Image (tube, rainbow, N blue to C red):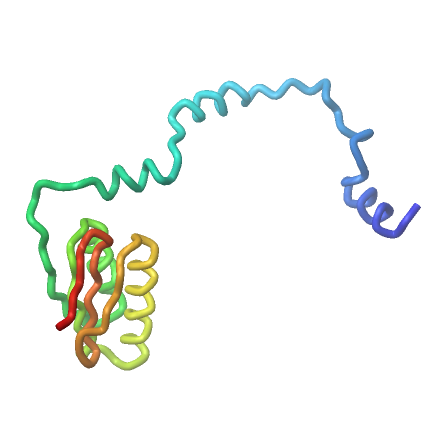
Length: 132
């Protein structure tokens, strides 16, 4: 017997001969019920990012500490463009906030653009940005 098989057998990963198929798994009905409500991620995202009848809004925020990040996230997830001015923050916290905003924009399929020194625009996916 090889060393890998000995380790696998020791860990209980020996093979199919140790599998007990006589056990009745009672949780299969729960899984089938969950499958009925299951939707692909693309459908869930389409529902979250559906067209709204409200006009687009741009929110200007000046966070003072990193704990203000959820406010930025809430506005951006509501499909509002966010202008984030991190001039009031320390350099370390400003870097963390910009990293958070970049991850937020990426995760929600939006964009982040630097528009001035320590000022950033977070734009939802359906917003077009042009510079001229």
